[in-house]
Image (cartoon, rainbow, N blue to C red; front, side, top):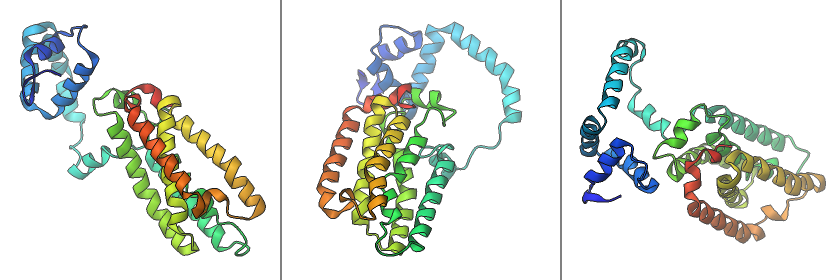
Length: 274
């Protein structure tokens, strides 16, 4: 985006945006929209440009507001408190039941570990810990579970930043619960924390290609078939969850993070909401 000076958009870009010029570069439009969110000066300049360049739009907007203004004033509740507004930037209502389900599964695995047949039984907490956050991540960026997905995906801030915020909010809820369960059952975080982060990064990396929900389902299915089922059948801790396998998980985590960063633009399109 060309700048009139160090902090503001150029007059040509603002007037072209106000006219709806089709020859504007998509990256410049995206950067301008993101800039307008935090720059009152440029918003005022855009308002003046719209008035000058598109009077029909101004007339239509005024007519709509004159009809809807009284109804909205009567129907809209009081504005949310500041902490609620901040919370909405990190979470989505669709995440709440999924996080509750993840915590319920964690509690169930903990109870089964506590009443299990003995030390020879592999810990369910250990088997499930790497993939539990993936379910919450899938719910936080799912087209089918988020009724506002179209609005979310079309906003200037709907890219990698929002994905990482929602992922962090899921991990902030799930990881403490897993740490508490591991402390009760004697499962150390060193066995599952790195696989947990690696699975989360791979869900996001694959999500940029096939959709986060599909990626999460595929990863959970592979984990269940390749690791969980054989471990339950043999009552032994699988190699994937032993300390010998941690370097491999570190490599997978680095690979997943690299793919997410390289394909960060994929999260600004609706295809990532599948």
